[in-house]
Length: 92
Image (cartoon, one colour):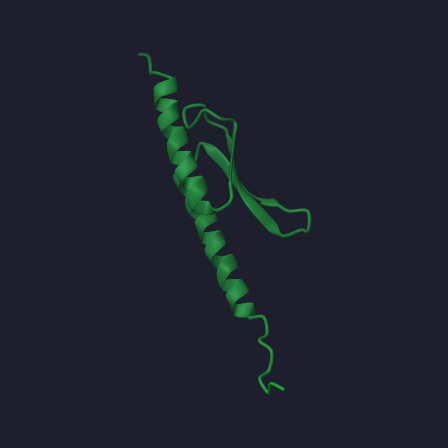
């Protein structure tokens, strides 16, 4: 029979993950002002996908962009900005 105690959940790790996610969310909002960016809520109440809705037509093409993490959302929003440049040529 093992004498080791079972590992317990580390509340500090959860806090660190939450703080990192909040920082990433703030950075996305700062860098992509043409979108409203938030975290979706899952059916169980936990935070889920990262979502950006377009509010400035010069910032993107698709009305909603959804990604599983902040890095993927950032990449998608960079692509959206590039698509917006080619989809809507500027006029004088």
